[in-house]
Image: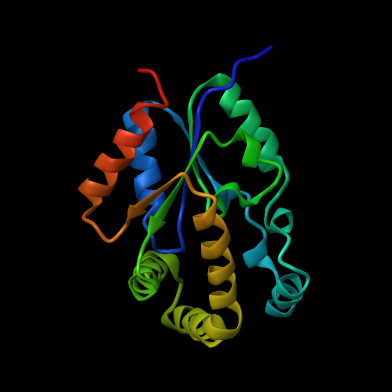
Length: 188
């Protein structure tokens, strides 16, 4: 039987600092880094389809390419994994692979500002018109579509987390707390 190594899942709403914190922790541990966004399919769907998904009970497995579960399993057999995922243990297929789920708690307004700051970086857009169109669409859909998805995510992933970390702290404090938690899971 192949030994599985620890999988540390870091979750939080968009703008919580998952990407930055997961990358730092993976480098610190010498672990594989697996970002959920590489497998996420929900944001590629039309808003009406996402509303239908919400109305159908928001099945988490429909949010991502199932190849993610296979890759997570494979990586965990090779060494420790830091898994950046908005859903934590909410996805039934990869929940059993997660050794430790951590939720980064961040004020929603601050998270929204952080998300927009990253999304609106000049290098992400070919023109100001393209950026303005995306911004208008995102803000128009925020109350009816984005916020319900965030509420679902926060209620589910936060409740299933082993640790809650105050993501409003300076990044170095978040990194130190993550390293402290991971220390007991990953032998160096």
